[in-house]
Image 1 (tube, helix red, strand yellow):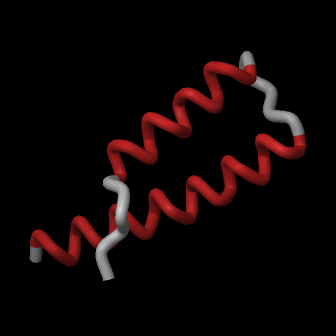
Image 2 (image 1 turned 120 degrees about the horizontal axis):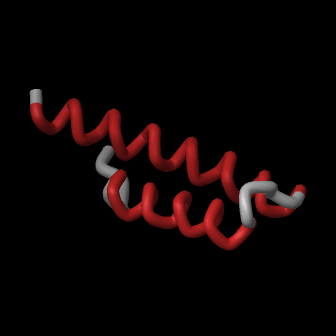
Image 3 (image 1 turned 180 degrees about the horizontal axis):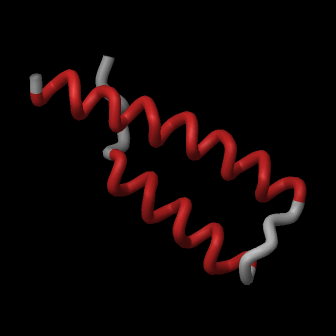
Length: 52
């Protein structure tokens, strides 16, 4: 199943989260970060599978 968002788009959101945080994530941001990592990993796997 293909992710709705690409890994690149999710990566940009991850970068923005870290930029806004100034390098230290609050608990709510940490939860968001973890969800984004899971979504990003799924998008990367979908990209690899699609390329194969």
